[in-house]
Length: 416
Image 1 (cartoon, rainbow, N blue to C red):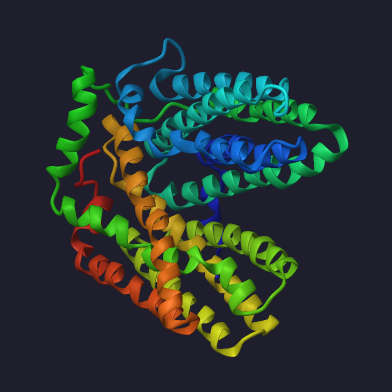
Image 2 (cartoon, rainbow, N blue to C red):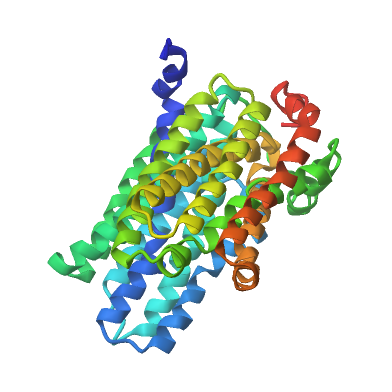
């Protein structure tokens, strides 16, 4: 098999910039969530205050509210996309460095304010990085672009999460946060190095246009409501299975937390990264519809591996198999799904439309958790994982029914 046509796209400057900006997007997340919680715990902050600090992540949920501003207004340098990216990165660097100068024990509420500022700046960076990636990448690069973006994001989360905790034990919390702030120079360098999109697109004429026109334009398309439903349903089975995987492996299958941390978290992350890279590479030749269907079927079938494990009980070979297959196929599905979101955006309103579509995509992931718990109590783990397989089928059926619309996206008949 000649791999050259598949791998040639990795030499693209656009793909390289996408990788580095994915890293810049992933770096701040843990610094206002898990890593910050660890710092507060070490400093002896009470659990109630730590719980309140989790609200710092709210800007990630509501980022679509100010996305129209980033479509409408153009910074004075580097254009509509890169100008905003650089501005948010400067705010992030200043905010993270300032967090490192404080102490959770002595100035908790000042630290909370900075954490919210960092989360707001990070969510804003995500808005415009998603928009820039969508505007920048050519159609054949979307799958690979989605893959390397996820790769950069995950690597950054490891650095600001697991590695930051290790560093804090050795060099201190303040120095660790300052180091994390310095790592944003990678993203700033990518922003300055990044090219402008080939197509020059005029910004909306007014703020009203930036808010109203993205919705009007999207809903004027053939099958708009069905497209929105597909976004919710495509990864629903995956979301159901993933919502209680850790609890199942410990309580349902009887594995130790060390086993789960090593295999499910460690090997699972590696399998996800391999999946998005493999899926993105295959998408160089696969059409969008075919990639979504093939990867979606694999996602659904992978849930049956956990049903097999639930029926068999404590089996390390089956655990490794289930975790590897589920994360590998989930990563492939993610590459195709992000490519779909990019294909659905009109370049004039990319920031607003991508923010809204990605928020909609999170609906299943956010709201299936409570239902999953009740379902396990009612039917047990074996039947639960079979249900997660069934939950993936409506999305695949809808995908099959929408083949004509998805093929039209690749023929550039959709706006944008």
